[in-house]
Amino acid sequence: MHVIAKRTLRQFWAANSAAEMPLTRWHTQMVKGRFSSFADLKAAFAGADWVNGYVVFDIGGNKYRLIVDVVFASQTVFIKQVLTHKEYDRWKP
Image (cartoon, rainbow, N blue to C red; front, side, top):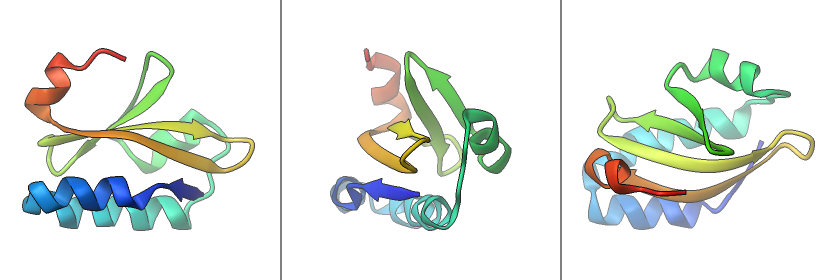
């Protein structure tokens, strides 16, 4: 999968240093993966959910939420937001 844009992850972990390792692991697994459907993605990432047209990943033991738009046909993932769990509770897509 092609992930756009890792810069969003780096900006988040600059302010939340504990998020760097779990976000880096997610990024590495995503780039190496090939997923043809949400079911394939869910099999690889148990903490992935489909929410209002986005895929939301639980990151770092449920401390963070990574919100992405996945285009399976082009194997592209667009990072929309990275939020703390508390911020996610207030998030409206």
